[in-house]
Image (tube, rainbow, N blue to C red; front, side):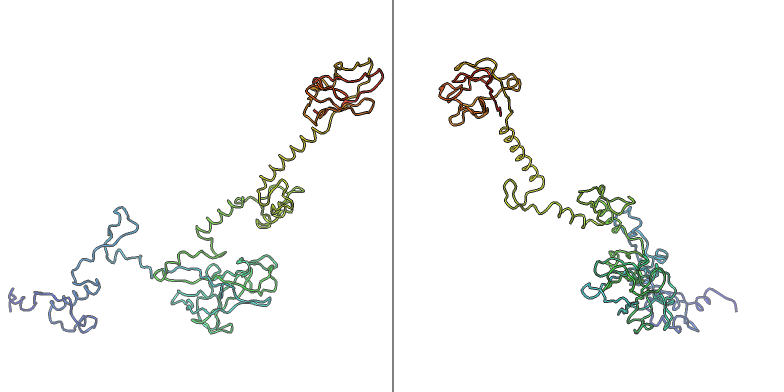
Length: 434
């Protein structure tokens, strides 16, 4: 029978309407019928599947775009098409990352150990990593089960800290003590999903704590957990890396640089201390190995600036202020001593000295600047003592000895006037203080 357009339209129904809500598209009877009712029915099944894939209201809805953080030229505009091609290689649940977990014990006091301790069984409900599911605890060794065994140290290593100072510690050979994760079921525990055993190691070999250099009574742990990126918490990114397993993050490097700046040390200076002098009587001559010891030595050497009598210094004053006060007081004392200790001159009388006649002082006194006569009542003769044959004379009162009422008058800065005659051969001694 000849084919005609009419016959074709009768055999193949056109899709006059669409339905994108076909029920049962997830069953083979509907999605792949043995005998299809029509192309329209098949297309409606496909429409429904497309809508389900898109998660939209209608099968033809535009899914739009999303913000691409690698292309910010357009500001915060949604600039990347929302499609499967855009998602390729961008699924976070297909990626994992190892994050450190802090386990410092109740109240951060750590877990008790003894010299014979070979490891610590910890209650940790996180699953063990397996070949089928790599997330969880990367267990190093297991007899009871098949887990992520054979991992390298930089994956399964657990950092062990001395709870007394939060520092790592070493064995007698200088090797750092660390731990690896072992199946809890092999070490008096339950195992996967309940606990894990942290076995102690040093230099790749199992050890106990009988030969460590520090006193260690309690230990703390920082252990690794492998997580999917999609399971990462916001605060996971803020955790610092392992103490020694990894290099450390930028913040740790910055903290170390700040410590160098604070202590005066520099990178690679070749010495453990920045002390530049170790001479005798130097407060740090013992060459202390840490800043705290150095500060304690300085405090002991300087003292607490508390004084017994507070004559010239006051409690609590600074070292600079105390030295300044002592400097001024010592100068005042020196000046007073200088003014109280005179220069001695002796004159042998070769020509008789008449009374009430100005007598020139020895040239040595004049060349030294003479002296300053003092006429203040009660302090006459303050700056010069005059002896005749060892007998101390008294200076007259009044300006320049004008009253002539004693043994001699201080008439000028270079001469005196005796009130009695001094014969040849007698000795006159002058003690000049100013």
